[in-house]
Length: 460
Figure 1 (cartoon, rainbow, N blue to C red):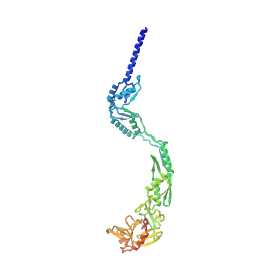
Figure 2: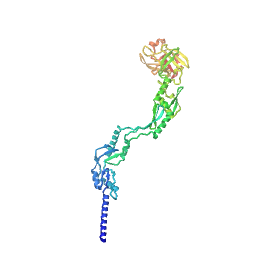
Figure 3: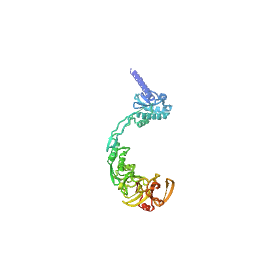
Figure 4: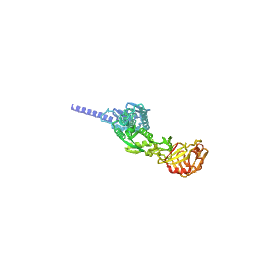
């Protein structure tokens, strides 16, 4: 009896060991249940069978973002070959357990013969499709700070649902190689009102809103405040974005009040009459672009006072303007030359006194070569000078004069005319000059000595 029991136990032990040995061998040569490679089920298969199965599989080339299928390209071969056997064996060891397991796992292997251009093409298509889909999705709007109507405020953010293409593509680059790839749905998020960026922008706007500068134009001071003159200011990438139309309007206002370029003058003549004369080359005006830049820079930098002198411009020889320092007599002052076409006379005023009164002959009226009316300025003087030009009846002329003082852009000026014999009051009607103010030689000496560059010349 005892002997039979011992034999039975021995046989049982042998059977158990045999079963355990068989199970252990199977575990070392076959994949566990629930194991996948690149989303292909390889449960219970040996290495050889896995290779054969993977060789015969096709890659679906499908990409999901969240639950939405974004890319569904043409099927291709997986690229697996016998060269991938060692990688499969290594994976076999990695997943092996002592006892059978049904824990689900998906392992990724990049085949050695994989056509890498396919993945690049899929990424390109993913980018194209996401970009196209974003056109019909709601755009997120960042919170922003704005200076408007004299105060700084923060505009809240607005959420959207556009795909964050950059983040999704980055996730695809990191994703394992699979026939079907699923990526997390990531949406673009707006910058919130309590972000550090918006706080910094708001502080920057508060600074320029509180800034002010005094703009000195001749003898007048204009106090310009950021909160008043800047219609709208925002911040982008740490830099101001400014609507400067308010500054431009202020400059226009100052020009209308003080500038003399192209203005109408009610000019009191030497004989006591008042005539209306249009400004021509004489005068100055503030250049809008230069003034706006100057004022804006002062507000940004907190400069207390700035001067408009370098912001002005003019026409003719002096492009910086003339008469800026003169504020009396509508900007003409008390030193100027005066020419009356009707009276055929010229007067030279110096420091409020007439230092010369002389007969002149102006441009020939019958041929339309009249001396041009307006308020001009002495562009330059020369002694002696060779005058070259043309006039009706003379295609080209060249004549030497002892004294020359030009005052129009077209070449009209004062000069001595020793050759002239007709100095009558009506000479200009049919026997006038080609446009210049002919002056008797003896008078021209005094005229030349008493006029200076940039001084006004009024012709009426």
